[in-house]
Length: 443
Image: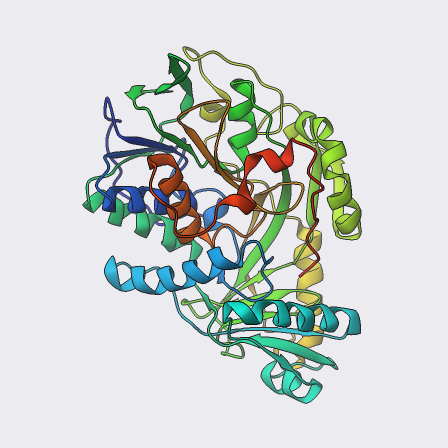
């Protein structure tokens, strides 16, 4: 059974025109819609499936500043404040709580990396501190492993992925945004060298400003319009447990797995960096750009030839604006979870928490498709080759926590407003102009 995001009562059909059209109803798209409509713009968001149906409901639910790439840190800091404010402002349950995040390790090199990060984050005012071996063992309550240290961010938080994007969508709709589910955007119409509309399966929306927040599908959409976006999808696996005693109140990261306490009394379990890379035409096309990233992660990735070679966002499908597009053929990416990873995580959890051995029951498991860029940092930028188009994609597993600020930044760029954070680290051109890209560490 696919993981189900909280349903919304979406707008029945798209409007004929809007100041801003957003393609994609994930966490970034809905936050962009809310930001733009609050600024007084008419907004239409079209989603090929359901709001939050893909990776935005399938992630761990962490809302963190801790161990962010320095280029993302201003966005993470702004997002954390926005998560808290919007929970009260929208009167919606996002599941957001500041319960803190703890990382523990047995590896001296990892500990040194965290310590260096803490020093680099100090000018930003991030609340973080290193843990001694005794403190790590005490804070990772009930664990049997001999941690040599860790790091703790008490003001970081968590939210519920199946609730958050739909809740923000409803808040945007109450302010006047049109959000249309089961309405795929097939492509752009152009006039006088710039965007003049978005062609959807249910008609054309006239506009001069479009935001593409299409997640793993963004590269395929751009390729249809002659623009190259290096993007790769990694198939991830997560699961949730049946209710358990509360041994972690926020989030915990160990070398073998991550935990987040859920509002239903269970835990969401993830496997950091682990997953499957399907060989597909798009991946082969961008293999050179992704080679350094692959080398850094090859011990945690399985590679196979899968169905995505012929179907899905990494295939080389072609279509016209008056015919059925790939976005209509696959309304929701719902890759199967890897049972071997679930089994591995359950064994590791039993060894780490001996008192829970035999008590941990999997309530539901799911797969996801995490869209990566070669340097692990998103593109949030106006596209010079297509005036009127802004792109927000390639969040590399970081999009949920940074969604509020990322959506606001994307909406500001798309509507011509002055951004509250510097957009230059997320410029598109860095991926295609020969810039020496920095591959982030495994943090």
